[in-house]
Image (cartoon, rainbow, N blue to C red; front, side, top):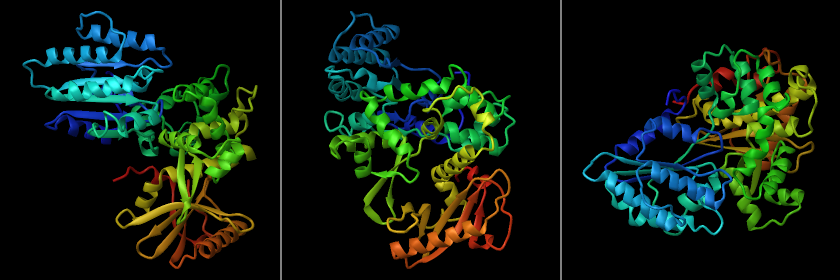
Length: 475
């Protein structure tokens, strides 16, 4: 492939390590739609496969078999078209055996969008397991890599399979969105002359999704790009929302309703609260739905401090957060974002989105605090009794007898702590110590975009972490 891959050094190292092993490998690669799974594999192997096939998104059973038969023919199969998976995989096994006769090199098989092949009543998973157990794993030097955007399907049917594929995969790779450092690298490779605040602003709307980043026009401002991608006539990312869920789930409306409820809550919702708001039973089906959203990196779970029975679900996908906040209501203003610069609505959103950015980059925060060399546990906390209610987005419980409470503040210029904010931080700290019965020392730090204007109140922060720290690569 001509385009150079960016920001996937760790995944390249893992694939290189697996390729050099002296045994057959069965690798499962999964992650959110548009995160770059196919591009990673094709780039690593330079499109040199002994067999490659991709499932048809939203395809029928007949279309899936047509795709598989066409791939078999392209790689040398000369038999009749096949219409059941046992025979199809038997044909693939025979094809690979002939290709590898007398050769000692790796036999690389790449099956992309694997979940698509599992149509209703197709018995695909059983046939695939039979293929690996009775044919592929018996060949020498086989490297089978399977890929899928339907992350929940991949985990249930491949990674955690309880049938013929139980404990058969040798490695799994969960491909996650770019962090800010990787996103900045993407900008540099494309010679974009954006400063870090502009990169942060676009990141808070798109997240670190490589495909979304590829849609940017670097000659425009961040605000102009947001208008073109979300609010212009036939805006490209306005259409993406429904496609995102329809490509992943057979019952997308149920998932969309849960995402809708989570988008309304900054703090997140418990499972019981979700069931009540959606109007559904708090049963196994709801639990499976929530697990699927977590597995796709749309939602994160956290426990309210040490109370392990209070699992809270919080929407974390930046694209979904932005879409629900500004696109669902609709607007005829094709310059909606540019015309809204400096308004309370936009400024409030920047503040909330920046808090999510800090959560997503918690390991960079630990690194900046030099806490990456000691044992720490981090979590979010929300008060259940204080009035007014308060919450802490990131609390870092340290093995050296200290709990660090992080305050995240977005600001286009140097941040100034007011008396009201100072008193709120003191109130929050006291509520935390009282409700958690914390006996450790408590300290406050500030995470902000720029510097801080020092005044009477700013000394409450033991340390200031800026955008430059969050952009640092993890060591």
